[in-house]
Image 1 (spheres, one colour):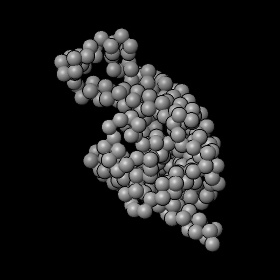
Image 2 (cartoon, rainbow, N blue to C red; image 1 turned 90 degrees about the vertical axis):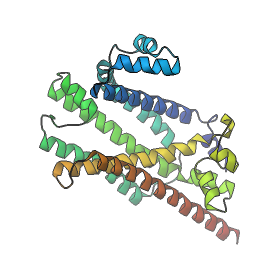
Image 3 (cartoon, helix red, strand yellow; image 1 turned 90 degrees about the horizontal axis):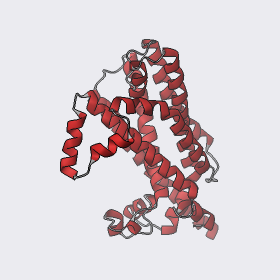
Image 4 (cartoon, rainbow, N blue to C red; image 1 turned 135 degrees about the vertical axis):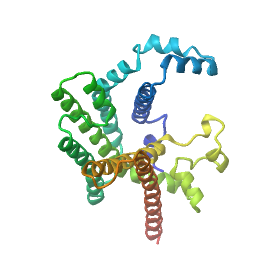
Length: 301
């Protein structure tokens, strides 16, 4: 692995990677907690009773900490999160752009376009059929569109907010796809440096564990036994991007009437998209690794 690659791969040397991961983690935790609290309230669960139960289990003064730092109720927090989504998406996009530009591999335009069309096409079709079937957005299921509507915001404001936010996050998804393609050579180089001879060794290297033993890879005990987070970015982000994009195609088909709406099917579609993409991701890296080995053999002759 070249020195220039090491400056990109290793956490301590790549400040851009650190910033992107920290901001992404905070964003996911924030939105996850917000949706979780909103779901509790939506199900009619008494929030105060829920926090008292958690306090009795953990021994932590959770209620006091929450109400000192957060709005007084989950509804208000949910509304504030909706307001913040464009800014959060914009910050993430700036950091992702810097990370993407660290990759130097030429883009394969055919594959790049196919992935981009899948991401953008599903989102645009989902939005188009939603507006066609429910122009006033009464039937819209997006929780952040719903909170704006239920808060009596004007419909034009809701449309502008949704359009801007969706554009940012579609661009973010496309950026992750482009980033993987531009970084693929660095990823393959790190795998090649470990010289894996079996599928287990290849999986260990592809998941950032090339420097670890099998025990450390499967059962890490100390922080030093963790995988390289650089590999985890693409390993997690690519399946999530295409899993969500597949769901948006499915959601559009629900609006059109080609499939029957069912929560269990929606979960299956997302999981199918995530795991199928994960398998394709690893198979693609395996193929690229084999091609790099063949290139070394040919140049060595």
